[in-house]
Image (cartoon, rainbow, N blue to C red; front, side):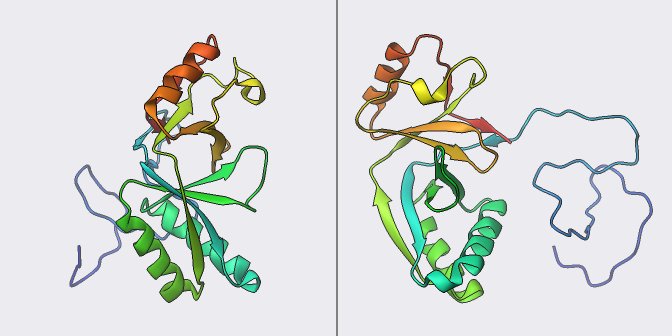
Length: 185
């Protein structure tokens, strides 16, 4: 939406289009209101990526720009960022719905943040959010050879698999484990 003129308003109603200055504290799905009541809405579903790649910046001196750029692009919803389980941001795994999104990521990091990257495709095609991490010791999940434990930026544990057979095998091997195809933000 491009407005020809702008007005400062003190009150907005459902359906109004407003612009809010964001110093980096708002996310998609946040509620802004004047009420003192607490709100708890069901999360927005996060669609499962089908393509994964390990992403590294080529010039190690540009780590700060790389992290800033990849986080910004993830906040916009173009990609999803994951980390190896029990590690930090040393290894970044990016998940996308379509492979063209990798090209968009590469282009934007180079042109907006001055960062060249190396993409290493990973063999995973299925991702599952662990619905009951408080009931399951994620470190003790008995997996398959083509399964990897990862976590999202909020620290939620996930599993990625190369095929659907492995998803079913992991569920059979781990009594009580509950997996979901969709995450909730």
